[in-house]
View 1: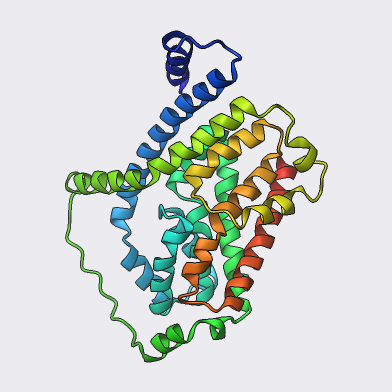
View 2: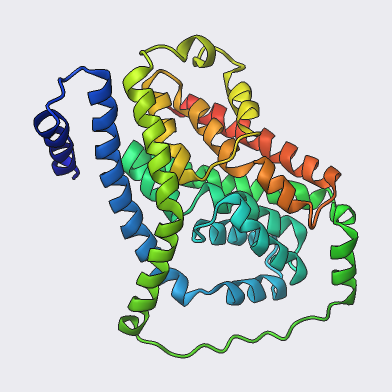
Length: 325
């Protein structure tokens, strides 16, 4: 599918720039050109297609539905699925999370959305397909949805509402149920497309720099880090590799678009796929900037509980991936 992209990258690096095959700079640059074109094409296509879906299922409509209905546990799965179709990083998800809490949606359900949204979205799916293939992408998407769903159920069972900040407690105490209104003008698809394309450009403008930086880092690792460098520390035989990778990733912060090219290189350098994905999930889904934003609505104790539960679920996911692959 992307053979022409590889041919273009080879032409630029080996013909136009006259670099030799096997040269470290040539390998790094070839990786950067190939992955940049391939990933950006996938991202554009998938964001645009998901924009069409989102135009028929707007945020307010989903929020109101979740706050009204008794779904006997399915609301956690629905919140996770909603997280899949929202192209947000963890920090961008926090304002919507706050809106869910203020709207009266159960805390565990909002956590399901908060966990899944940065991990599995159209950007991450597009990158995964290009980097690891459809089979791995499907398994990753399912695991991400289950991770959000299970985390939300566990957090709801812990009855953590008392650990919300006084500000949120006051808002919830004084707020009245909003009337369930969603007045939408009827547009044909052809009328929606210009707006969807405009939204696509806005999203691209925000993520392209991070995509390119991530690919650049991946290219440098691909060209300059020798084979087997990581195997000594994060090999499949090391049972502590997954938790080590997860815990080390928590202080970091990046979106899926930036970290996935790096994950691809880590796998190529010998790190098992499950360990690399656990690292990626922790980088994307758990971060210090996210924790700082969550302080608006959560006490430190609640943030610690949230991070701990998700960290354990990520570690389990990493082990499962290593077993499968």
